[in-house]
Length: 520
Image 1 (tube, rainbow, N blue to C red):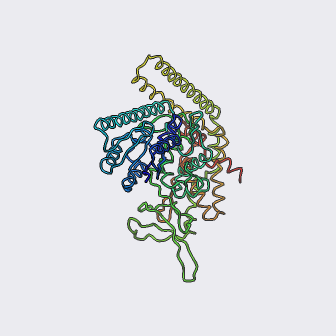
Image 2: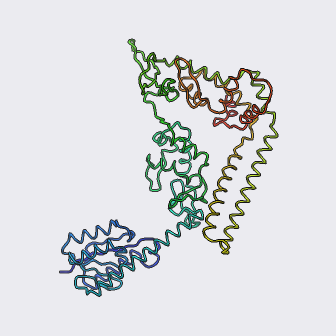
């Protein structure tokens, strides 16, 4: 009967394919060896896996198969380091030989290791495994050193994360247009504090997002993405943060806003009934949410009421407020940002007071920052030259390199802020003053859901105290409410008032006032 044999061929990288260790070449040599020996190969494993890992799936399958088939006495490998480069797998092979009577063949070197091998042969077997192990460790160490060096130069030393792709020719990371827009949209939505991870995954612009393996992005993957500084220009490698040279997908400002939401006390959720004013109000008594509830009257009509959730205990005397009444109570916070005509005219005068000077100040600020960035970048380049010429040691180089890169990142952030100064601040400032009048006229005619949209634009949240509502206004409505609430305002500009007006001038609404005005 022809002896049965197993064939195991392996590569651990694409580079080995190019170096003559290809799977096909090993397979060919294995079959030629079996033919010379008169073996019949009954099963073959043809895999790509590292030989230094403790858990080698295909290798372990082969070992178990050999143990369970007594009739198979021969196992063929190409050379010893195709079999193993670690002590764990060496012991498994020795067990197959000593306890199961298997014969281990190496087709390229024509060597055999079995029970009849001499002590010298076994000693050489151990030495060859040790040499293979050392080579593997050396390769691993050099690879890790190379990756750290690559990271220090700003190159991400791993597979591109979601939203990017590896350019093999240029050895750089590039934005993946099929994913980048969806990820940016996810950051923008989360930064508003109005969406949960589950809600964002259902948004059309994000819903089609898939991983690099074409799997739908799940909740944990989306959370990882939104917490990853890679998307604004940094990356972490081996416990250290590096400034990457890849193109940022978002600004640091957007990333920071997103982190505030993810790490804050936002518990955004969909209302099962879709009550218009849910997630707007908190109770002034206990700070619990005020939510809607549908009640059915004997005449089979449905009415919506709002009340505290009473999560911290029921309040004596606290009842239910009809939705119609609540909509009326919200009118006062809207009216509180509508300025009298005389005060509005006075602010318009302030808007034009230092118009030219403020523009020049911002322009000079931007030029100064760009000059600072250029100087620090020149210092960093000189540092690289000094290192190349051997003028600075590694410790000094790494310290100064980290310092300069951190400074460049800080200045870059300031430049981004400076560039965001609204060039149309005067016109938008005038439109902002008119915006509350537009909102109040819209509020009167709007449906309850549209009233809620207007209320969310005015304030981040509202507090219900008995039958009055107070607002935590957003900018610039904080300024407008403060001005209207000042009983002793004077139609003149002092330094403090002028500073506040300049703040209004430089502020840019997400829903640009000028665009809102033009649409209506």
